[in-house]
Image (tube, rainbow, N blue to C red; front, side, top):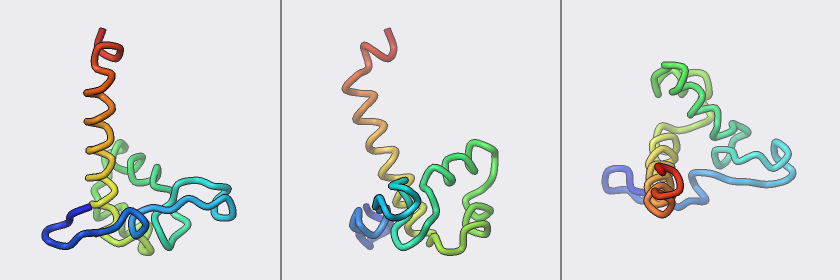
Length: 86
């Protein structure tokens, strides 16, 4: 993932381990589920509010996760546009 000119590896952004949060996808090096970021944003919270609530997640990780999610969603929707959009 690219944040400005710095590249983050996927392993620096997210991790999934059956021994951590029962295998829930979390921000790397934390026990914070990535889903919690999306839930905060959907609820109208800012990224800064999320980061205040979860100080173990870096801004760089959160932004990189959002970029990664956007890329995956775009590819998925493009691949299944006919099925999804009728």
